[in-house]
Amino acid sequence: MQTAPENKDGRVFVSPDGRARVTISGIFALESRAREFAEKAEPLDGATVTFSARKGDGIVMSGLRGATVFYRKALLSCSGAVWSNVQIEYPLEDKAKYDSLVAQIAASLKSGSGYDAQCK
Image (tube, rainbow, N blue to C red; front, top):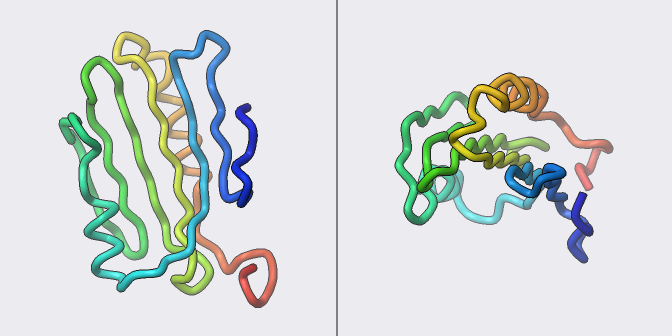
């Protein structure tokens, strides 16, 4: 696990061989909902998107960036005030090895009301 950022809004986990990474973060939703969804739907630089879907307050995107598979999921939580995000990247040659892990992580990211009434 990498060192937490100063604002403690996420973490990066790197595989022992350094070839795969999982980034988990939360960020306040500051723009209009339409603008935020449009930004989340933008592909990464150099990416080829093979799947993209929006359902309710969430968006999912996956594809390739060179020889790297990426998966991104973002959900609005805390009554639309916070984005909960996960991004997973791993080598295309290891796709079979990581597919079930990606499915488990993706299923575990759910929107919620936050840990207190003010969603702090």
